[in-house]
Amino acid sequence: MSLITRRNALIGGAGLVLAGCDKITTSPTVQNVLSLGQKANLTAQRLVQDRNALAPEFTRADLSPRFRENGTRRPGGDDYNAMVANNFADWQLAVEGMVARPFKLSLAQLRGAPARTQITRHDCVEGWSAIGEWTGVPLGLLLRRAGLSSNARYIVFHCADQLLGAQYYESIDLVDAFHPQTILAHTMNGQALSVGHGAPIRLRVERQLGYKQAKYVMRVEAVASLDGIYGGKGGLWEDHSGYQWYAGI
Ligand SMILES: Nc1nc2c(c(=O)[nH]1)N[C@H]1C(S)=C(S)[C@@H](COP(=O)(O)O)O[C@H]1N2
Ligand SMILES: [Mo]
Image (cartoon, rainbow, N blue to C red):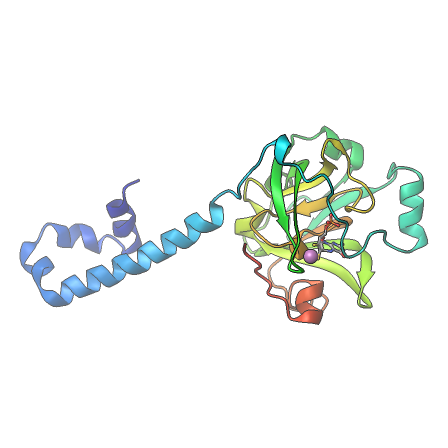
């Protein structure tokens, strides 16, 4: 679609009418209005394009020899330990909230689902980066299967661990939720995801910083608002340390 068509669509067809009328379009006032509209449109368009752009992907030769385990390295509690002990055979991921058809999937079902593999760089706010290969189910696929409500605005990831005396959780908007590189990864560097890196599954949302990459994801919930979800700021670090909710790289 050309830029002009987009502009006309955005300003409700007025551009089409004006385009055929030299007298009006050459008047300075109308020129100003048009160029303002065009600027606003370009800004909006750039924002959307920026948000949908892919994060850089690398090759196996670029993989970091060591990928640090950060934050929780093993969730406490008998429940999690019991799940590790039987290889998450009884574990299920719940996809629920504002969806028409909530469902649960076992780890075997997730492993058998269509997957995407990507080699990306993880950037932690603490100042380290590492390149890893992630394989997992595109989140958008799960949300489509669940029939996401048109009132849903955010996807919340409920995790198995606590930090700073609070439950770890994270959230993203629908642009990131349906971004092609947003996956629930069950495999890292070709191996089942380890406990240190978030077993059985962890989020990869590649356009954002490390703390958004929720490990130990137990439940995916679609919501209309983040108000009333834990501290209300959309994530553990956002609630307790003032980190930005949108942590774009
Ligand atoms: N559930 C959970 N997810 C988490 C964390 C955590 O402590 N608990 N730490 C975050 C931070 S700050 C980073 S940098 C990455 C670290 O992932 P890694 O251990 O695979 O390097 O996970 C993020 N996701
Ligand atoms: Mo981090």
